[in-house]
Image (cartoon, rainbow, N blue to C red; front, side):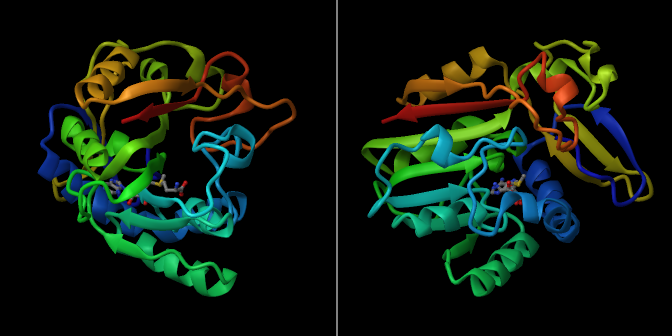
Length: 271
Ligand SMILES: C[S@@+](CC[C@H](N)C(=O)[O-])C[C@H]1O[C@@H](n2cnc3c(N)ncnc32)[C@H](O)[C@@H]1O
């Protein structure tokens, strides 16, 4: 999901470290947060749980199980906390963690407006500041997973804080999208790069030369190996279809592409 460039950037494909990824993406989301919430906040809903641009909700998909009341839940890459707020409205005890201070400020603002409060902490998905076995559910809806380099570490952290039988679920850009330009029109249906090329997508500030945005790619097979390698058992892979009559364009997601190819993958695994 490419960001809207705030300053002129050039796009590169090259390896980047975890430190570099984090140093870029935190400030990038700080800069982008106001525009992001202004553009998508109403669609997300202050107390609403969307799994992705297709518009499918947790209430419809039931990824996290039928009974949420009383569950301890951690959202990684929680943004303004819309998903966690919906979980709180269902009786869960949800906590949000996000890299971006500005996103968390929006989260607190919406808490005040909505009357549903989500405790939040600033941090990274690769280093969770929580005790072992503290949560029944760890999830992320287009949060940190595709922004971290040390993905094995991030998944091991999610596993560590889960109780036995706990659920780890996350949505990401569907790995097959990596082959296509991030373009909602027909142009975005023509494969132009290798699915198997894991070299990260990097935006570099044209003036300063500083890395300003990073996105990482793993194939479907990589994800299976990463989750299994962390001792998790995959129970579901949801590839939500584009709903009939849904016209909203979100970055490279549109009905034009959604008719033919999945834009979102939701992995569900258990300890
Ligand atoms: C697309 S938003 C998803 C949040 C929410 N589900 C939504 O749809 O608005 C991605 C979030 O991931 C956060 N993020 C990026 N890298 C992260 C990391 N390494 N650890 C924690 N959060 C991260 C960003 O700051 C941003 O708030």
